Image 1 (cartoon, rainbow, N blue to C red):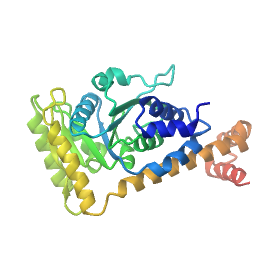
Image 2: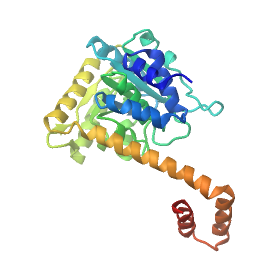
Image 3: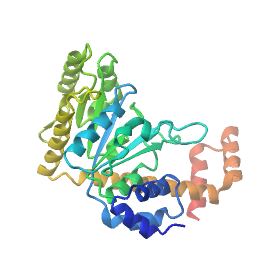
Length: 317
């Protein structure tokens, strides 16, 4: 097996092959994952994490690609984690990074990885937090996390992001859907993409109106901006980058830069602890014991809470 310390050192130098191998170890839940996390820990905590979410069809991938171009023009190293639906056959991502952002494939200052959700809810892959650590340690200044889509349960990206961008498009009823899904509270920045289409002005007005009604403010003075973009042509992307930088400045000015890393750490710790508990439950209780408990619940001899208590008791020993 390849030397882990050498892989980490090469990743720190920005060697794409090493970064890719480390992300693969994370995605495959390698037995060396704990060792890898310990090796990466001293080098993390520097990258800004920007989450991009929105309904299918609003242009998330095109916007992400345009943002990469703009950030690279500014001399920043960029990582992209594009979270895709899983293939029902292979479990891998249905969309490939080369298909999505082939223009950046040869840029050594960009690392792009498509990750499969593998059935994980919340719009993100379960391995996303650890993959973020790899890209952070590899020297990325900004990591863009593009989610599968957005809905009432798919706001997990907020836990991982310093700045969350919610994309909408005219003619898709997104404004009303945003209110229903609770996305108004999620966004640090709104981007109305495809703003050259009819109805863009109405979408912007509707968003601004709903934010006034809901009094959506992020902190003591941050008013969520609405940026118009046409990502396919690059129009408005500089304004979007400026909005991201303004939000970063706002966080710094109000001593809130640590909030994102703390949220990420909390979410990561919880996810690891839950995964460990599930593994212990399966190993200690065993499928036969769980089936027996399930049978008693179905028969009415036991309620599910009491059954769960028995499982917890078996884990505690």
